[in-house]
Amino acid sequence: MKRITVALLALGTLQLSQAQTERDTIDVQVVDGKIAVSNEQYTRQAGQQTLWWRISTPGQQFADDGVSFSPAGSHRCQASDRNRLMRCDKTAEATAKRYSYVIRLVSTRSLQPSQPPQPDLWIQDE
Image (tube, rainbow, N blue to C red; front, side, top):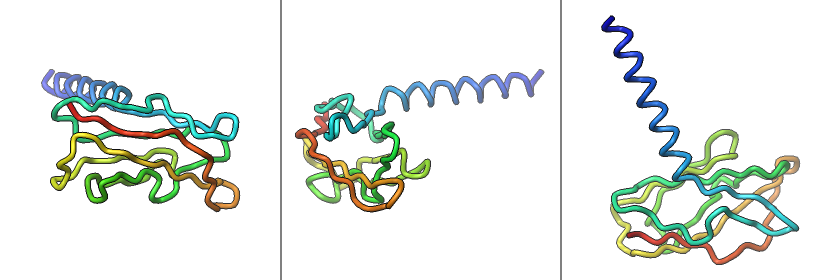
């Protein structure tokens, strides 16, 4: 019985974590030759440290520095899932309330930069 309870708690925690990640994910696509995101001006909740970006356009993936913030040093970003996901964590040096950022993509075939135009992107902290 104890094992079942622990397993159910672990499953519940995993589902909550997945729901949290979905809510904190910005979807990225290349549409008509331009980068399009699900939320150009994202408002980050108080205490929220991590954001995710997910590319869904076939033939495109994030560069190793696929999401870069200004001011520099305010976030630490890392690619995962064969560069289809970017995870960015706010650092202790982050002091601004508004951060602009750019997205960098590469072609999955050639691994060469593929930099379509993109909108003015930013994160606003509450």
